[in-house]
Image (cartoon, rainbow, N blue to C red; front, side, top):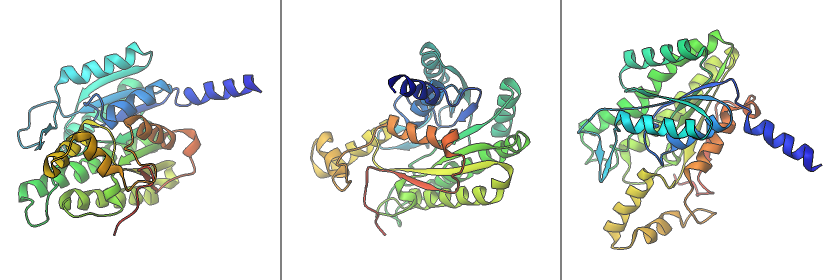
Length: 291
């Protein structure tokens, strides 16, 4: 029995062999994009890590700056290769449709396929009270969180249809299926991601494309740490205490890790989820739903 179990585990670990995956927003070492790219590569996929790789002064939220250097993206891809995976880096601005189309087309040409798209790129620039969020932040939120995913999906779907199907996983948020005060533009755009996901699932399922969304709660990424730091300053507590406050309502009483998110994405992208589409999956440790 132990031998059979080992063989089953080996098959699981390489269940994405021969697949090509494109991951957006993969330029942060402890981000969901980079960790998911590493997980997909460990399970056999050829992975392209992409991110915005030029200075954009408007892309700021608290201490967080969105927009990494090409060198950092290359370093993350190199780490995956050193671990035995196949990974490549590509600078892509998801808000630029022409750039996105060229990136995905070149990926398909170079590797002969495009089987998995993980739409992870996003911004929290629209966090704030409804009446205080600027027009610029509303526009940026829609440009990145919604139009960015539309651009990548429009570029990837024809390639996937030509190959008989594929898997698209969109990163929404727990605030894509609920709402709390103070995250107006972010919440609005993340709800739109769910609508986009269900539309693609309904329209392209007959072509073999499965499209699902993940809805992470509090995750220990650099973005999550920044949010905890902001709450700590607001309430005059330590960052650790702020994290406890943020995760207290969850059934598991803790924040999640990028690896736990990556495992869900890998499942939705793999053969075990080939009869699942149009889902919005909470990855939130049992965090209770609000409105």
